[in-house]
Length: 294
Image (cartoon, rainbow, N blue to C red; front, side, top):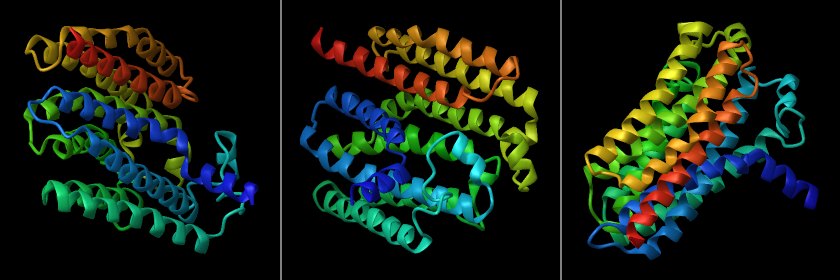
């Protein structure tokens, strides 16, 4: 029984939930600065987002195996219960439906208490999740993948959380989400740079493949640079507080990742970029929390 539970946990890729939690917490700290904020709604927000993220992760792996992108070689990077055959396709499909179902039920509850716009946020999240993974759209294999994750972990989750807690749409929340969205895009780009050779064999046309290794590496550096530039501009225009400059402490991590790509060592850059993104977002959250205290 415990072995089965561990397999299901591994299939959901729980470490990736930190990215969703980070964007959610950014929306929370921004909402806490608003005139009116119902903080207790953060619990159903998290309880709705995590199952949908888990469903999307399983869906991603399921179709990666089905379309031949994930093979036994994928086990070099992480435990893969689907490739190993420990979990069957029929089981996975049931799990995906249950997890999406939980998200839909919680979205329905939030819609009843916070307004119809919740349907828009939740619907966009589910649709983008499906379109990212499943043909004929399968944005994951196209140069639109980075744009999709930018939208989801940037404006969609941050603004969606902000709206649920405040009942308002605020341009400041959208703008504050942009650096995080750019960094999450850089995580996917780093992953696709690493997988250029394998993805090319499978007929994918990711942004990394279209640009080529060198140009994609330069674009990666531009994404990181733009995230830091936007942070500074957001502070100059008083959308974020000066204490959010704490996020600049992550610059050495970014420089190190850029150097790894330049030296043709992309193997761990996606992981390092994910760590950078989490550190950056956490420091912005801490900076904005300090604003509340000062």
